Length: 121
Image 1 (cartoon, helix red, strand yellow):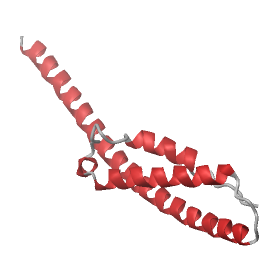
Image 2 (cartoon, one colour):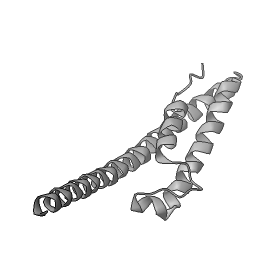
Image 3 (cartoon, helix red, strand yellow):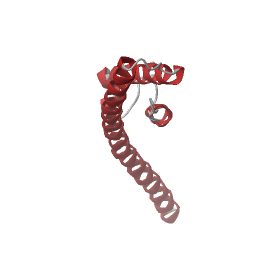
């Protein structure tokens, strides 16, 4: 009887320990992912500014701006707005996401799609 109880307690303890380690690892990775997201959005903003200057110069020289450039700026603006809403949502500070917000994994995927700088000339 004591052996069976000992085995059950050991299994429960192993399960609880495993779940605790997973949860702590999730929180650490979540924080790292959020930090990386903010860093990448900052880089994206700098790239947007650089390309905006190129676009201004091209327009001064009477060059036409391609639709892909305008579309890229629109996607970047939308993405920056989404990230700003996410940043202002306190739920992510606790390692969880609000159901109204885009999950961090989806934001990362969007960032990879949007962070494709285009050439003006």
